[in-house]
Each structure stands twice: as C-alpha cells, then as structure tokens.
Length: 335
Image 1 (tube, rainbow, N blue to C red):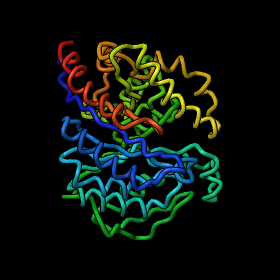
Image 2 (tube, rainbow, N blue to C red):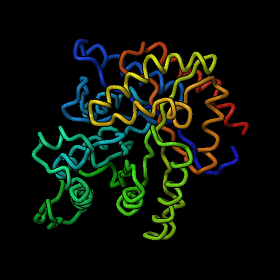
Image 3 (cartoon, rainbow, N blue to C red):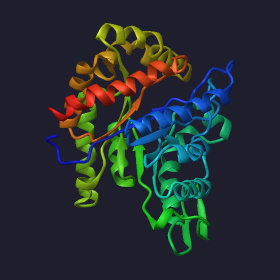
Image 4 (cartoon, rainbow, N blue to C red):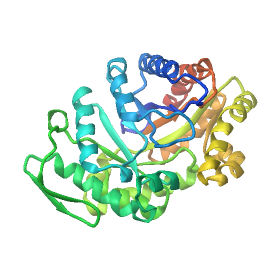
C-alpha cells in the first residue's frame, strides 16, 4: 500500500437482539463470529454500549471479558461506552481489570451519550454530559497513577485515592473519543488519543474533521498527531452486485436505523438513501474498495466494520467478512 501507516480492520458486534429471542443463543453466536473474524486475520473486536435499550443489549465489559480466550491477539474495544452515565472510579477499575485479563489489548472507545431515557433514569441532567465526561476521563487516568490522586471538579471529587487495579504492565490504555460535531471533535483532541468517526458520517465531512482533529492534537501536544490512530466505523455489506447488496441492506440495515427513530433520531430514516450512497459500505467487492480508497487517502487507518444487524442471518454476516478478506483487501493493496 502507498501509505506507511499501519492499516487495521476490526469488527463491531451489533449485540442488540429482539426481546422475544433467547439472548444466550445469540451470545454463543457472538463467540463464533469473533473466532471467525480472528481466523480471517481481522485486527480487533468492538462492542457497543447502551443502558435501558429497546432491544436486549448486553453490557460490553462482561461481553469482552467472555471473548478474551476466543479473540487471539485482536484488540478488544468499545465503540462507544457512555462514560457520562457511570462513576469514573468504577470505570477505571473495570477497564484496568479487562486490560489485565487481556494482557494489554484494550481500547476504550467512549462518548457522552445522547438518549434522554438513560440520563433521566440515572438522575443526571443531560445538559451536564459534556463536563461530566471530561471530568470522568481525567479521574480515570488519575486513578491509574502510582501516587494517590486528588481531584475536585464540578461533578466529582476524589481525595487521595488510587485504583486497586491498574492497566496491564503499566501501559497506557488508549482513549478513543466518539464525537459528532466540530467542537466536540476538537475537544476529543485535547482529552483523548483518537477520534472515532461514526458509521453515518459522510466521506468529505469525516476527512475534513479528521484534519481538524489532527491540527488541534498537534497544537496541544506537538508531535502527537503523527502517532495518533485514525479510526472510523462503517456499516459493511458485500454481495455479488450493488443491487443485491442494497436489497439486503434495505431488509436488515434499514430496520436498524428505523429503530433509532425511537431515540429521537428520525433524521436517520429520512436520510437513509443518502447515507447508503455517501456513508455506508454496501455493494460489490469492487464498489466497497472504491468507497474505502478516499478514506485511506484522507488519513483513516483503523476501520471498524459493523457487518450484521438485528434479524440478519449470521451466514450473510460471515459472507461479508469472508469476501472482504478475500476480495476487497487485495484490491486495496493494489491501489
């Protein structure tokens, strides 16, 4: 490949299931999917996070712990964990425990969250989510230091405390920040190690905001932008032809975005056709490669693919992964 940056491809497990179905059966399937991706040489496996979701949505920390012995050397991550809803001391201990169990393979993808239902039920004003989030990340890192950590903020106070568990081998657990506006993306450069671009952002917008993130990161810490990973999430569905892939996407992926309308995200349904052409990786292998190339040129180097959605047979999901490995990646190597 022409880029000298290390290129990674990972999978995002869409572990959201109908309440009418037995969750344990799906969790067994997630283990099988993880092993399948591992054997295809994918570089990471990520879990999603919500509380009180409409679909059965198991929590990502115990799920990732269950996947550790099945994931080889893959990264284990969240995309993204809603840190503004949970006490940072709890997050610090659980993240460090996961990092110890996986021997240093954890990536903490995190964000402020958006669902009113979650904030209302936790008794947290949604208007405070940004400042709570920034304080939480400061505290998590502070609790991992060798010396007792003291912090006094608007939302949290810590008096000379340390986490009982630290990251594996004193490593730095990367904080990858999910953000969807220019202001929060540049804030991510000040408080995190990377910005995770969402699956629904359009190509030109993603590339422009990645540039803004890297400029801010370089301003805050000269030299850091060169080392920063540049992840992006993308919906992935591969079939023989573009028309066949679109037919499957209309059947499965569109239902996922219709479900988002229950969370006051109606615009996703209204924009679905536009997202299909400008954001999602849906099509034949050659079409998928053509859609990825501008993102590579634009600087992205870590692709996290969500490749199945509630109701989709796992056989179709596995076919997308297999075809990406066998047919798309060789096309990218030839660019």
